[in-house]
Image (cartoon, rainbow, N blue to C red; front, side):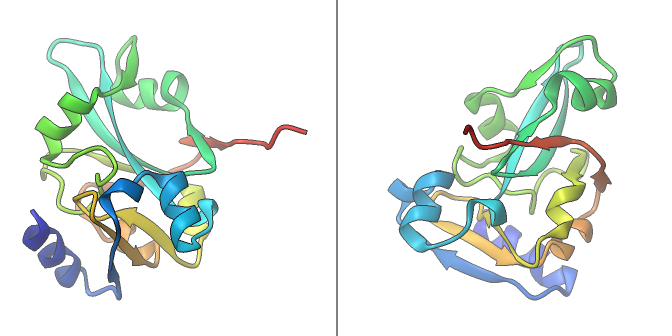
Length: 163
């Protein structure tokens, strides 16, 4: 899996860095705290499923300080009456990646990749690296260069801190 991810990244022609991390610290909040990254620079790849037969899937990339609009924008784009997050098992089966390491890079060619427009406003993002032991650091342009990638307005809403 790692070779196919770095192969696709190399083919994109965009600068990137593979950042090794402790698999126990792969979840976003722990990773950012342990390694000094901003939550707002962490872009999570979330697989969603439309509850239809046959089931339809998409990979959504949103900043960690945002909430994916599953029941609004995602459901409508999937063209289904109901949508939800794919289970960990479904995600692994579809992507070959474990939760905590899922990335938009190296996904199946027929899986749409929807990127929240706010991701593109960051100077640099941190993405899953395909496994819990690594992350990908690079400009958001690497996401836009992926096949099947589409920038989507209001795919997610920023989570406002509680006062």
